[in-house]
Amino acid sequence: MVFRPTRRDIDPITREPNDYALWDRHQWQASGECWLWCGRDDVGVTWIGPVRSSGLHAALYACRACLYELDQRVLEINMRQDAGTPPTSRESVRSRL
Image 1 (tube, rainbow, N blue to C red):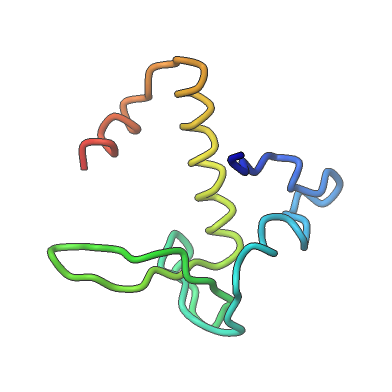
Image 2: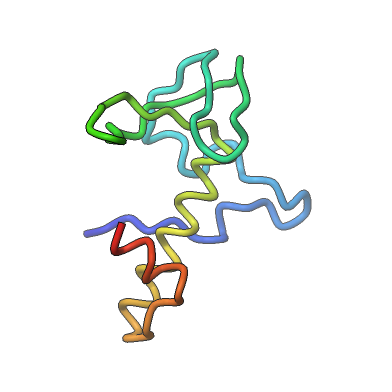
């Protein structure tokens, strides 16, 4: 069984992610640097995997907001693939990288 997060993880009133949504599967560090979109420093982060760039490797960390955005993008592309919908041009470029 594959867990796929949904927009139900967003509080319908505040439009913010619920405190319990997605997060209980991760071990959070109280303070670190988010390597994804926001680039914030001194924010709670979790390790999401290794990253390789130009032949070098590093640990990739993300904050809750960026991890949520990443999860939603992954969900969207998987839903499109499940429906047999062709990928967007942006997704096609990413798959070749």
